[in-house]
Amino acid sequence: MDDNARPHKTRLVRSYIESETIPQMAWPAISQDLNPIEHVWNMLGRRFAGRSVQPGTFHKLQQALLQEWALLLQQAINDTIASMPRRCQACISAIGYHICY
Image (cartoon, rainbow, N blue to C red; front, side, top):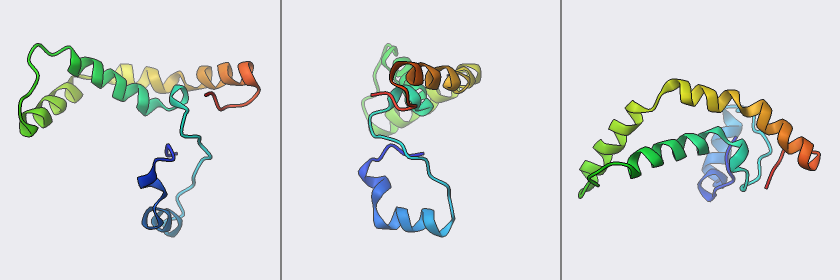
């Protein structure tokens, strides 16, 4: 699954995916409700925004993000993934298909 971002659509990436026979799902670019990684990034972003001191250099930014990533609870990530059937069903109920916009 990718989000149809330009880097995912390059010839090089498509060629690699085909050569490795990686299965792909049809997935629209505007489907944040059904993409668990978007929710995980959001959790990380909220943690990072809550820091009392924002990093002033790239190295400090990198270290701060790694620290916050390490503090994310695995259970919260698991819960996000486990919510997928409910999210898909909500979309199917709302519009009759698994894609929500």
